[in-house]
Amino acid sequence: MDYKIKSRIWIESEHGVFLGEGRVKLLKAIAQTGSLSKAASTLEMSYKKAWNLLDSMNKTAKEPLVITATGGKGGGGADITDYGQKVIQTFDTINQKCWEFLDHELQQISL
Image 1 (cartoon, rainbow, N blue to C red):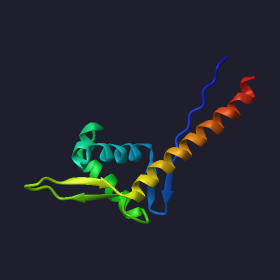
Image 2: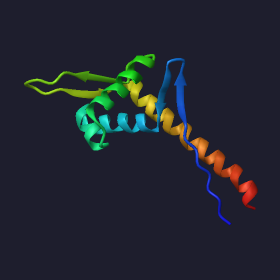
Image 3: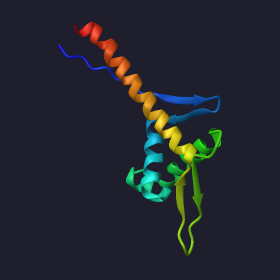
Image 4: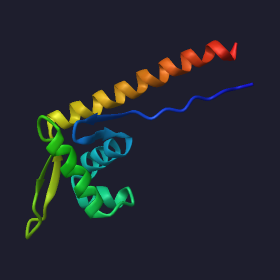
């Protein structure tokens, strides 16, 4: 019989959730689209929810993850900071290593 193991990782601070899979998807969508509004739309998320998630992450992080510019004639935008890129990469690495570990451990009962 084949078994599958499921896991979700998130990072918390004393203020609550800092980072999780959904928040990282939002950061990646911002990086791809250059816009919080477009990122929210891509993820079928309301702009308000996306803004609240981003605001929460930026306030919890030791440095801003995203820098936003207000819209207007030239339009707004959002840019992932270098620190934001590092956080995304680190989270992805943690997830990958966790899944590899869990798959390896699961093999012990699948033999």
